[in-house]
Length: 208
Length: 199
Image 1 (cartoon, rainbow over the protein chains, first blue to last red):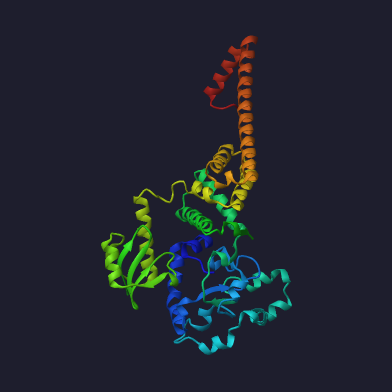
Image 2: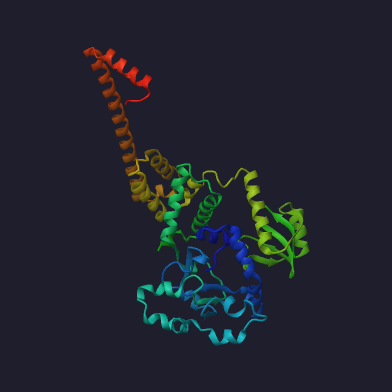
């Protein structure tokens, strides 16, 4: 699911300003896309994921929802980023394309297979998670409904992120943590941990 | 054009007038964090003292949000909540077992071989003092204690080696004195000093 800018910035080693600037670029098409559909402002977005932490663009905190919860909600899958496919650089939202592409939860596997038909032929199945869900390439899930901590199956955090945080703590003790961005990234990780504990998600944190 | 009308610098919430009208935005400033608001709500928020009135214009959301974030950080600094202070200890306090384990791994595999005993001690004592897991996770607690013991043993061994070296130096000096070679060694040392080189 989509993360906030500070967490995203921390995970990608970008400044918060850069991330916000990037969001700014997408804000108008996002509003146009959601405004095109009834209750569009209630849309929630995710991605089909069969392993790993998903696209680093959205952060190394990867919240995995219980499939049973998602499938009980109004939900559609499209073969890529909905903004890029149907709204960016377009005068109006390409509704015909949305109707043509969208798949129900039951057909999500078929949608993914059609999308990656060429890749599957020459790719080992261990590489499928990376193939299916990576930067700028994923099967997007659009759904409506209430998501709460009980809907979460697990929160995946990259092994590299744990290593980086431990390294930053040690550097602070060495008196070597001086870069503002690094200090902020420790701060945001800490805030994320506090929130996860507050919502009872600390037991669902996993390292991948 | 966006107009910032009021801001709560403690939480980063703000009333903004955009093309759709008056809206209330809040962190993390994603689309779903924007709600429409009324002038009455804005007036009440300012009146109650929760929000500071502003009148500033911005070209786009990114510059507006950047401004709000700077205000929040400035407020935090003024309130003595500087992000720099003890952020490592604060993270240790709320860190999950996976992070504490990783931290201990790095203490063992990086700080120990580099003989950075003082840093290792600081990290381990911080975990012992701040981590909430020390009360609930006996395995982790035992590991921290074990590592801390190893640090202290190594520090003591280092001290002993240094003292022994000093004693050796002293005994060398005493030997020269006893054997009567001290004056000639002094002359030799002076010669080297005057010459500025051993060669």
